[in-house]
Image (cartoon, rainbow, N blue to C red; front, side):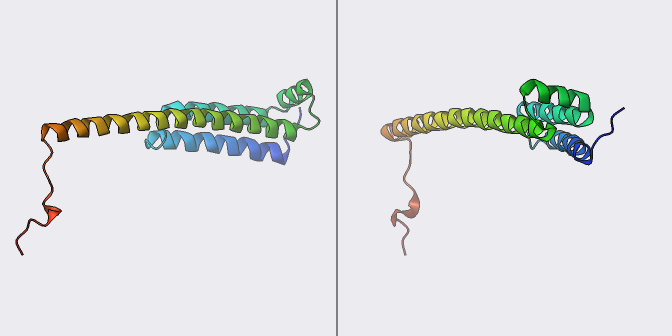
Length: 129
């Protein structure tokens, strides 16, 4: 039986703590379920790798990496890259939708002004002082 290193224990406990924190954010409605799934899966994978030395060593050898900590770092970097790409796609879509909604609002406002439905505000100096 192999003993876990201090680094593995800290890594695994940190991953479990992150998973619990993500679940708390979902419970308090500060993080949507859509994003939480990615975080819970990633933190669970890190926790499993932290607690199972043979699995981590096997993945390290299969990838041709020298040290187990480098494997965890590389997987974290890959996860970060995927999350950045995912967020960039979401941000691009939201930006496009925002422009589209702004155009639609401008057209609706123009149509209302042409129909005379929009009234002037009383700040035009019409108050008798």
